Amino acid sequence: MRAVKRSLCLILALLMLASLAPERGDAAETVCFTAVNDTLLDLSADTMPFWSGGVLYVPSSAISYGDPPELGIFYSRSRDRSTAVLYKQRSVITFDLVAGTIGTNGSQTYSGSALTRGDAVFLPLDVICRFFGLEYSYTRIAYGYLVRIKSDSVVLSDATFIDAASSPMAQRYSRYERAQQPPAGESSAPAQNTPAQNNTQRTVYFAVESTDVSRTEQLLAYLPSGRATFVFTPQSLEGADELLRRLASGGGAVALRIDASAGADAALAQIEAGNRILWRAASVKTRLVRLEGAVEDTSRLVEDAGYCPIHFALDFGDGSVSVSRMSARTISAADANGGSCSIFLGTDETASGTLSALLVSLRAGNCTPARLNEVVVS
Image (cartoon, rainbow, N blue to C red; front, side):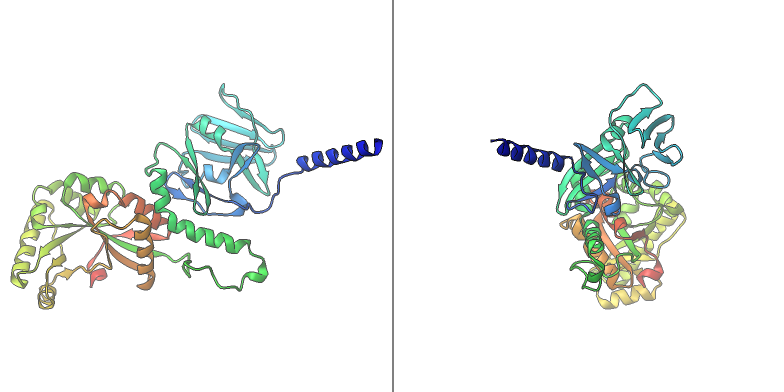
C-alpha cells in the first residue's frame, strides 16, 4: 500500500514540475502579424506578439513605430537602470525590467510587467492602450492572427485593412517561412505566388476622372502631394476653377477626356476648348488626353498635333475588382513593365471607396504613387 502511495506522490510531483516548466522561447507555431493604424509591419519571430498569462504582449518597436512615431509615442530604454519608458507629451509610463513593475507620472496604477526576449522588450498591450487612450484588435486571418494597434488617426476598418493588406501579408508570410527553415533548405525553390524580388521598388501612375469637385478634393487628402492625374471632360472643367488652380499649383496633373468617335478634327476642337477653360481658370494647359472611340488615324493625327494620348495598363473603372486583386494585378503589371504601371481608377465616386485601402496595400508592396507626364505616356 505504501508503495502505491509513493508511486502516486512521484507522479503528482512530476506533473507539478511539468506545469512549472517555462514556455518555449523559439519561433511561434501560430503566426501573428502586427499593424499600426493603416501600416502593416514586418513579420519576424523576434518581434512577434504573443500571449503570456492571459496578457497580450507586443514589441516596443511597434508602439514607437515610424519617424515621427505613427502613434505619437516615443520609446527609451535605459540599460543602466534596467527600465523601458514610453512617453507622449507629458504622459510617461515606466517599466522596471528587473523588479517587474509598472509606474507612471500620474495617479494611474497598473499591475503586470514588461517581458524581454533576447534583446527585444515586449510590453502589455492592454496597459498601453488604457494609458495612452488607444484601441487594438486581435483578429483571426488566413495566416494566423493580426494585432492592430489604433489611434484616432486610423482610416480603414479592420475588414478593409485585412483585404487591402492580403497580398503584402502573403509576401511576408512566405519570407517568414523561409527564414524558419534550416540552412540546408535555403537552396530549395521559393514558395509559389511569391514575387522573385520582394524588395523591388515600383512606380504606379494613378488616374481618376473628376466628376464632382468636392469628391475630388476628398481624394486629394489621401494622396501624397501631386502624385495623381485627374481627368476632366471639357464640360466638367466648368465651375472647377479652385480645384484646377490647386492641381496646377502642385496638387496633381490634369488630363482631358475626349470623345474622338467623330474624327480628329472634332477631337482637336474639344481639346482646344478644354484648354481654353483650363487656361482661363489656372493659367495652364495640358497635352495629356484620353481619347475615347478613336481609330488609329485619329490617334495619330492628335499626336501629330502635339498631344499625348493616354493608354492605361490597367482599367479598374467599373469598380468590380477587390482591393487585394487590384493591388496584386498592379504589382504584377509593374514587374512585367520594368517597375512601373499606369492605372485608371474610374470616377472620383468609384475611387473614393477603394483609394485609401489600395494605397495602403501598394505601399506595403514597395509601390510609390506618381502622376502621369508626357514622357510616361509616350
